[in-house]
Length: 417
Ligand SMILES: Cc1ncc(COP(=O)(O)O)c(C=O)c1O
Image (cartoon, rainbow, N blue to C red; front, side):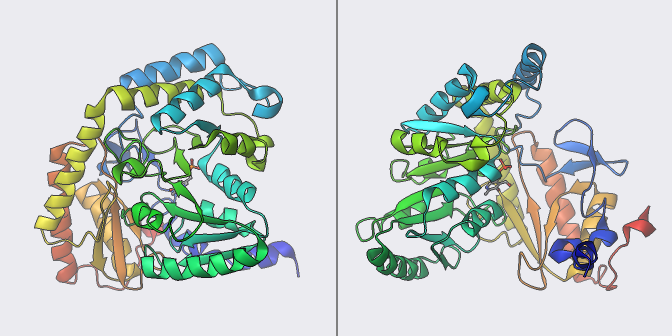
C-alpha cells in the first residue's frame, strides 16, 4: 500500500468537509485590520471570532511598541535556542514581570503555548506517575499526555464525583509505583466558556497528594480582579502549582508562559524539549508582550470594557430566550437545534445577509443535532454591535423555526461564488 494513497483516502473528521467548505466554513479569509468589523467575501461583518479579548491587537501603544521593536531588532533576533544563544535581558524581564503578576516565584516564557504545554506535561511525568485530567482538555494537553508512559485517568467534564473516583484510582496506583499525581484542568474552557473547578479540585488537597497544573489560555488577562486569571477569579492563586497562560489570546501576540515555584521552573527549563530544541521567541514578540502586560496592569478599564460587552451580550441573549449554557467567562456559546445542513445555512445567511461573522461548532464537538454558535466578545466591540447581533440572532432563530434552513442541503462554496 502506498503511504500517500492511504493517507489521503482517510480525510479525518475535519477534512471530510474540506471540499464543501474550504474558504468559507473552513479557512475563511477575514480582511482588513483586526477590529470589531472586518471584510469577509467583500462584505463588512461584525466579527465575533477573534480571541483579541482586550482589543490589544491594534491598540495604538501596542502598535507603536511592536513597530519600534521590529525596527530596532528585526524578526530574527535573538538567533538560536534560549539555552544556546537565544537568551536576552528582555526574555528575563518578561519572566520577572509575569511571575510578579501571577504571584509566583518564577516564570518561563514559551515559544508557543501548544508546544510548551506538550513539553510541560512530558517533562513533569515519568512512567511511575499518574495524571488525572478533564475530558474536555485542549488538544495540547492531550498531545502532552500521549507522551506519558504511565497511567492517565480522565473524568467527565467538571464532574467532581467522578474526579474523586479517578483520584482514588490514581492514589492506589501511585502508592504502588512510588510516583506522584498531576491534575490538569483548564481555567476557562474555550468552547463552552465554563470555568474549570479549580477551587473544588483544591478542596481535595487534604485527602490526596497531588500537584495542579492549570491551562488558563482563555482566562489570562480576562478573569480575576487584576486580570491574573481564573485562579485569581476563584481566589486560589496560591493553590495552583503551575499556572500556564498564552500570549495568543488576551495579549494579542504569540508565545506563552508557565509560572510556579522557582525550583520547578528551573528544572522545567532544562527539560522541556520543545523549548530546548527550538528557536527563542523573537524580540518584537517579547518586547510587545511586556507592553501588553503593562497595559493590562495599568489600564484596568480595558478589561472593564470587555466585561461591559460580555454582560450586554450574555444578558441580552438570555433575555431573548437563547440558551447560552453555563458560561461564566467571556466565551459565549449560543445553542440551537439542527444538523450540519441547518448549521451551514445559518452561518451562510448570517455572514452574507446579516453581516455577522461568528464560528460554528458541530458534532462531534457538541452532541448530534446541536449547533453551537460561538461568540467571543472583546473590549473593541460596541453596544451597537451587541444589539445588532442579538437582533440578527433573533431573526435567524425565527427563520430556523419557520423551516427556512430545512432544505437538507449544505451550501456548496463552489456554487456560492
Ligand atoms: C486551552 C488552550 N491551551 C493552549 C492553547 C495553545 O496556545 P498557543 O496558541 O499559544 O499555542 C490554546 C489555543 O488555542 C488553548 O485554547
